Image (tube, rainbow, N blue to C red; front, side):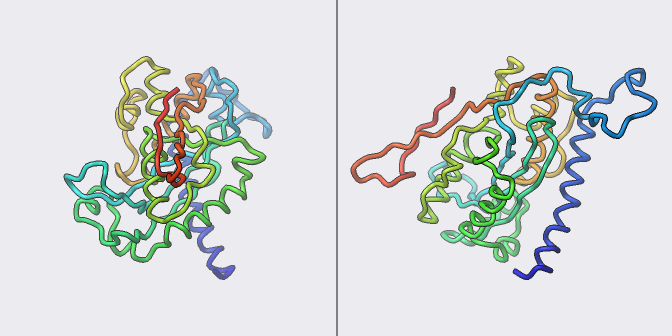
Length: 273
């Protein structure tokens, strides 16, 4: 890719980062006027830090809000060979839970390249979009560069945040099998299931993203089942939980089973701590 093309891609993503940052700021309750100084020094903490009075030191330096979309057909059970068609990752800083960077791409499926009408209606992703998108292997290469740029899973401790176990436990597993590759190492590490953590922290039943948002009198921003919008709303929930003092420890993982003839990734057990 030429340097001008790279510059164009970077420029095009910056408005999205700013938009999501603005959404997170809107989700932060305003402080009473009598708590706001008339003058603010240049070195003063930002508003999100001031609003948070219950935060605890997190076990990771960064978190990645992650929510893929995949091919699907109406009426098919979970044995269907889903392929990932949208791959969003929103990087947040554990010290402020503000957005640091965004990785996002649509993905061209290879086994069943034609999307069903049900899939198009559910995700809002058109056939033309996936036809013109990179392959999953190309996406992984770009995502690896994203991780390296921020020194994630190396110098900086990092964990994914997902809504439930399905994205990492199932969709990554199926896609790696379809692409005939081993599961990348960073997808073998324990991650944060925010649906489980939310239920534990607030002592309530497990619920979906819109219901979690409703606790804060917020509504879903964007389109449900858009991977990027789902990840954005996960980031909003994570920030509100952080403000309430939640500890974002890893609470889910996959354990690989090995047999004489088993390939790596062939069998997984879901473990909830």
